[in-house]
Amino acid sequence: QKEVEQNSGPLSVPEGAIASLNCTYSDRGSQSFFWYRQYSGKSPELIMSIYSNGDKEDGRFTAQLNKASQYVSLLIRDSQPSDSATYLCAVNSPTASKLTFGTGTRLQVTL
Amino acid sequence: DVKVTQSSRYLVKRTGEKVFLECVQDMDHENMFWYRQDPGLGLRLIYFSYDVKMKEKGDIPEGYSVSREKKERFSLILESASTNQTSMYLCASTSPGRRTPSGRHTGELFFGEGSRLTVL
Image 1 (cartoon, rainbow over the protein chains, first blue to last red):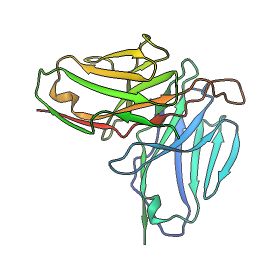
Image 2: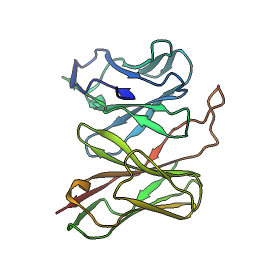
Image 3: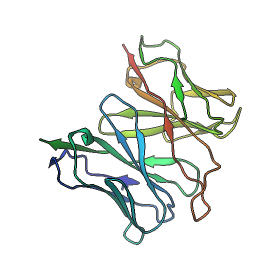
């Protein structure tokens, strides 16, 4: 079982719709969870972090964490073509200060 | 803003050559990391360092070594490049001083632009 799992996609949503990206992780002791966005040919950039169960909202982005079910999700409201990118889920290893990344979900926002 | 600078964006090397990839950060971060990124495999950690002259193996250290002589600089070395080391290499840094509500360290990484290495 992979430590951090994501559906590779592509996930295709029309402009203006809600995009829902999901991530599951295997280590129950994980404490910190992150979503990075990576445009083609560019390096990842942090867009959301979440540490406690529940929802965290930042503009059009909402991160949701459920530690009991070991999943974290990212919702993008009013999706724009500029949101088309690969979204990487990352989870902090509790035994060392390093992140484990999922393989990413490619999001395509269509006009 | 944090700036992480990688010395070369694109490199082409021949099998058996020694390759140096340099990374410099300007935010006095203690922690620095080298990842490689390959299609379908995601980001995989090669080596990381918590302090000057300290290094720890990541998930795929074979064929690589690192050097951290100064806090701001973390170098990745391929002693004898092979074709299976053709990849995108990403350097990142973070400060361990940021804590979560539970007291654990966070991992908000700041990445460099990446170095795309092709080994022929």
